[in-house]
Length: 374
Image (cartoon, rainbow, N blue to C red):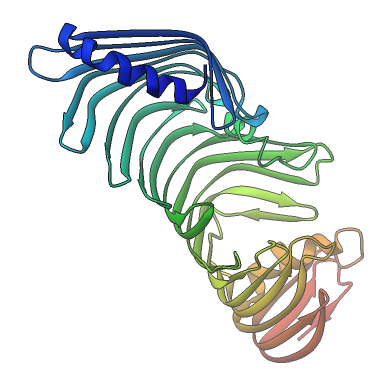
């Protein structure tokens, strides 16, 4: 049975249903907007307080493969009210197998009017061993989404988003996180987005052992505005105050040297490159770098170019973190030093192309005596 038949049947049965205070419809199969449902059941009854009770169920729903299996669905509204041109479900429950979101038993409310405005509020949706809640408002082609996520298991989240985003082969993640999202748009075109992602703990590793992280904790905040072409103007901030990370051969201990990054730039419509108009990178106890950069997100070399202003890099903590790892197999593996470096540094195609640096009180030495500069 197609959806037009449902509407026609509803008009034919409505007078009798209103008189009797009850309506029940069952169908073996219906089709709507490219989807189909089997074993559909619709029940409506009039309540003594003037509200309505509507219950909708389906044995299965065929949807695009990426969404997963929808089965044993139930939608129950115990307080349905119609006031003029407005329909409102004040207390609803949604249950069943919701594809990749698994079995659900969620509360919701819905308000819609004939002017084309619809607001859906959803509470306590089970998601990746955590919970989600939020609202979606539609006004014609325009839409607005608010969502809050709490207690997400990161390994389960990685599995959940696989149809749309897959981790690099051999990379595994674990941990727990939370976040929030606010987005506006029209039809399929987003207009603005604000999100916060908080990591209580992140552990990751690849099979080769060249990348690893343990007990990383931090917060990422992003704001984006999209133009008609799909390009996004982005501002963001990242803070990592705890945990450890390794990317061969560099090892970072964020508990000793916390990292903070702030940036503003533009992401191309095809997401092929990101232009950071300005950024500031601070590593506690080490120093600060400001500047601009062009990142190639699809090529072999990530950093295409950069114009950097180096603000007082302290050699004593910087050398063990950023220099010694690359000298570990050489005679200079125990290189140490003191002093500060500041100035300007340009990079092109990943390599230095210009340097104008000021050296203050520089001392370089090694315990084995293989190298020394004062």
